[in-house]
Every structure is written in structure tokens, then in C-alpha cells.
Length: 280
Image 1 (cartoon, one colour):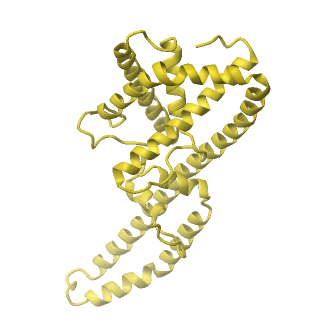
Image 2 (cartoon, rainbow, N blue to C red; image 1 turned 90 degrees about the vertical axis):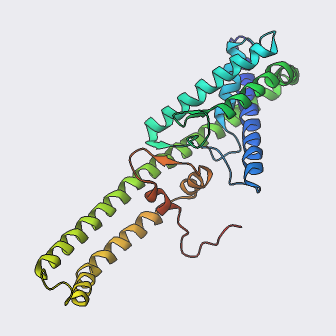
Image 3 (tube, one colour; image 1 turned 45 degrees about the horizontal axis):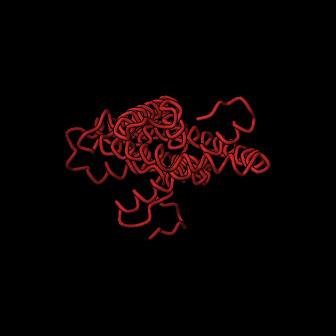
């Protein structure tokens, strides 16, 4: 790697981050699409066509290994360890911040707490060998060859887009977490109300339950009709505040889990909206 002692070097460093983040996004899209047999929904936390975890992993490996070890086998092992540690930390950190699990490898045969798995770690190790011994040297040479007249303005422009995308995505993730909190409160209120009404009616008609089953159900429906309408309206209002960034986060993370709420709440947010067409 190179010393970060000039603004030009910082721009080259950032362009490397963008290049490898974009390459990682393309690789993940291809890998997931092949596994599903069709083109999957856009992957990644950000709205742009990049996955920063791949870019940060590439730069971490290049920096720690000084561009790669002489023995490719050692590069493979060290790269696998570094990238797996980064993936585990990123999963833990994002769950701690947003209270949601953004990917889950629990169904894999060999995995650790659902955050990393052997299959992906091996692929990361192979990618590190390819990165250090094949890809990065010509990419570095090309970036320095085109000169600061191009690297500085391009890096500055991309940094602005990258920063804006991060702000939008973090905002959407926080809104999604709060929306789950609100839905959970609504579900608890409805359940408590129904249980209270059911208990009152059961006590009232105890001993004559079989005879008054029809009256019991009618009374229960009448007692809860207005309440449920208000709650349905409230749920509709909650959904109406969603933006396309929140919906994209839900679609691009099929294994998303909330640390504080059940999967049913996430599925409720994923349900098709009125007038929304099914995607083939």
C-alpha cells in the first residue's frame, strides 16, 4: 500500500474503496442470483450499487498484509481470518445500532452465531488471493497513472454521493426500527383489548356458553368493531409514512431479523400494499 500523506493519495485510497465495494456488490448479486435461479432483489445496505463491507475488507487486507504475503497460501489464510472478523464485527455492530440482524447464516452447516460461516470465509480467502496477487497491482498502477487531474474530482464527486447514500440508508434503517416498535405497541393494545372483552363476555355467559355462542361472537364483534377500525386506520397511517428506501431495505435483506420484535412484524411490513403489483 502507500502512505496517506497527500490529498491525492487519500483520493486514490477512496477510489479503491469504491472500486472494490462495487466489485463486491456485483459478486454478491451474481452469487445470490445463481443460488436462487433468477435475478434477486438488489443487495446491500446502501441504495447505490456498492457493498462497502467488501471495499473495507479489501483495504483492510491490503493494509495489514502490506499488499499481500509472498506465499499465496498464507495470503489465503490471513485474508480469510481478517475478512471473517470484519464480517462478524459488522453484523454485531449493525445489530447493536439498529436492533436488527441484517444477515443470518444459522442454516449453514458450519457457522458462528449466524454471523459468519465457513463457506463464505473460504470464498473470502480466495478473493483475497486474487485481490493481492492479481487485481490490486494493476489497479493501483492505473489510478496513479491517470493522475490527480482525474482522481481528485472523481473521488470528491463520489464521496459526496457516498456520504448522502449513507445518511439516507441509516435514516431509513432507524425509521424501520421505530416502525416495528409502533407496530408492536398496536398489536399489544389490540391483544389486551380483545382478551379483556373476551374475559368479560366469558364471565357474563359462564355456564351458558354453548347456548349463547352466537350471541357471544356477535357481542365480541360489536364491542371491537370500532376499536379495530381505529387500529386498522392507525396501521394504514404507519405504512403510509414508508419511503422507497425503507421498502428497498426490506426487499434487499430477506434474512433481516429484529432483535426486539418478532418476524411477524417484519412480514407485516413486507405485505403487498393495495394497488401494488406482484413482481415476477
